[in-house]
Length: 141
Image (cartoon, rainbow, N blue to C red; front, side):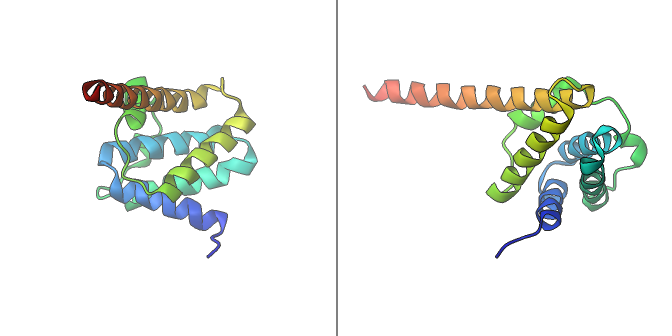
């Protein structure tokens, strides 16, 4: 079954809101809220939609005031470092959405810096997992 872009974004947003820890969902909502304010028009509405779904679907509704704040680098880093409960489709939708926004805004745009820290967290977690597997292999030989 083929889903529309809006359905994919809604599904991803719902999973972030419901399956992630509240503080992680709040950081994602803040990231997309800030994109909605600064992204080119083609991405402003989708980002606003994502932020609103996450904001209203979490177990404790997130106020707009909480979204309109500076995101600490460590918070964004931990989004990537912690294992994600999202399914493959939602992770793919998230990665593609971030990539497309990056292409339009540029990787050096100040609003995109939190995503750069998120990606650093992903790399650090990947490096840790690979190192753990290498250690396991060493014990076999």
